[in-house]
Image 1: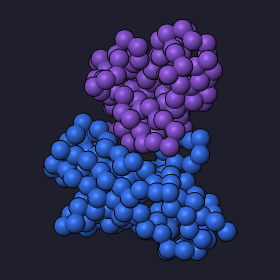
Image 2 (image 1 turned 90 degrees about the vertical axis):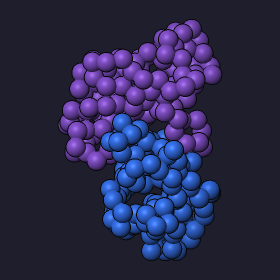
Image 3 (image 1 turned 135 degrees about the vertical axis):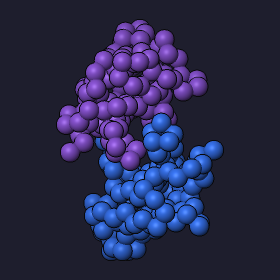
Image 4 (image 1 turned 135 degrees about the horizontal axis):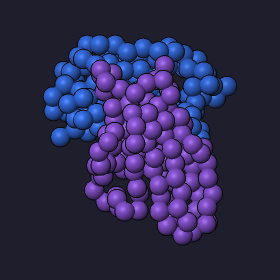
Length: 113
Length: 116
């Protein structure tokens, strides 16, 4: 079946620190992988995505590479800012699953000045 | 592009009343819309999947008679919480996909429901 396992938080970092949030998955077929970000009191915003193995998604300084050999899609950013404080969700989905998404549990990130 | 709106953004109602939440895709036609529920500090729980013109598919444990979903057009889906009770208080989020969009879901901003 399909599932996503995400690093548990909360994570607290100082501004300009390096960020890694781990995400691994199990899937049948060839899903797309996504990272979404949720700011307090808001819905989810698509941060980045990758649709096939070895693809790298990137946006706003965040990156994640679709690693089929390790079934991973870890989120990284070289230098976090206070404004990056939010909850990050890793997700798996594809048109083959009727577009149904499988979400990780979310990782709360707090960046302190 | 690919903007999804929800209305209202928050609502407070009395126990026993019904509440309707609208989800609209503003600049695209949504082949499929999803309704999620999110409890504080938790992930999203899929409630149902709806396709325009057909009955919604509900996830196990979700009461279809309590959470009525209508997907009348390619840009609008509604969720009606019937006879709401305090335990229905939650954050409800919809999402939509578009044809050929590689399965990407675009999420609305969410609706905070509080039942007194």
